[in-house]
Amino acid sequence: MARAAAVTPPTRLATGDRSGAVLARLQLMVTRKLDGLLQGDYAGLLPGPGSEAGESREYRPGDDVRRMDWPVTARTTMPHVRRTVADRELETWLAVDMSASLDFGTGRWLKRDVAVAAVAALAHLTVRGGNRIGAVVGTGGAGGLGTMLRLPARSGRKEAQGLLRAVAGAEIRPGRSDLGALVDMLNRPPRRRGVAVVISDFLAPPQQWGRPLRKLRVRHDVLAVEVVDPRELELPDVGVLPVVDPESGELHEVQTADPGLRRRYAEAAAAQRGAIAAELRAAGAAHLRLRTDRDWLLDMVRFVAAQRHARTRGTTR
Image 1: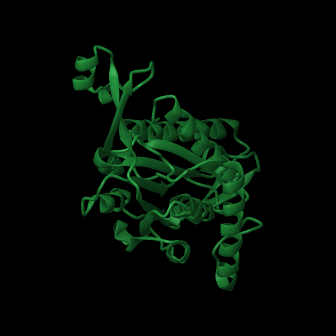
Image 2: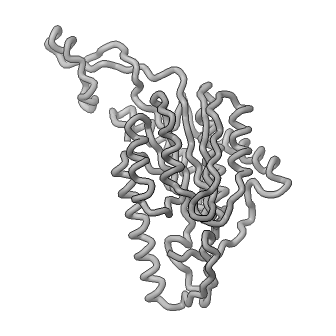
Image 3: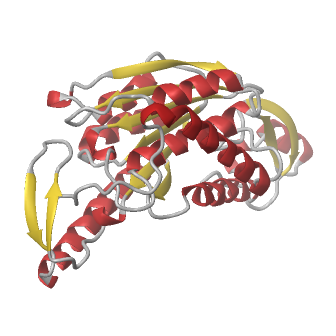
């Protein structure tokens, strides 16, 4: 589907000589807002029930029946569930898609900026509890053979800042990365249970990345961060609009005054996003959508708070 030509937003993150100062301001904004709005211990973005066996307690409505403690239940004749103790040290891995389609934006930010900002927020949520964070970064390239950069998982704020600088400094090249291959890099080598986050616009065909994502979900809690620009959802009525595919460089002129064209575009965009959401649900991934024209940080805060609320009610999604 064609996309409108990018419009440089008022503030563009991680560009030019000022990238260091911009990243510093970004990290300060993330720290202040997340710490101010998220109260309590948010050691991980997707706090699961844990994996180590703990003590038993009586069953309460809403408890996961898969955690029934049958020996204690038989001994006491009362239903009991086994508590689990979360692992002390969480390992979070990010798969960050930096294809050419991310170098686009008509809202307050470019999609690339939002992706970098998501990395900053995730790094803050991870390292604040002394946990480790690592990443694999994919950039565009001819034939989908872009560069795949692996950043080892480390703990500590200094290491997290280095990871963020490396992601922000990734060079976007013409063409699309193989998102399926990028996700599959998180499956190799096999790691202890943790959190895996995929940050992308997910414009690659779902059949390319759906299977690797389902494989990833077998061992890890998976979060898909979908980055979207409003012009990918609908076209404005602005007359003749030059549109360019950032991956192929093809340029077209579109008559946006045609209401039929705008309707067909919106319908095709809705079907595309519906297919992406359906594939993510089938893979069992939590789904967070961040838009270039919205307060992405507030959307992340709401998501994390909803995850915590769901957990306290006995569910993880």
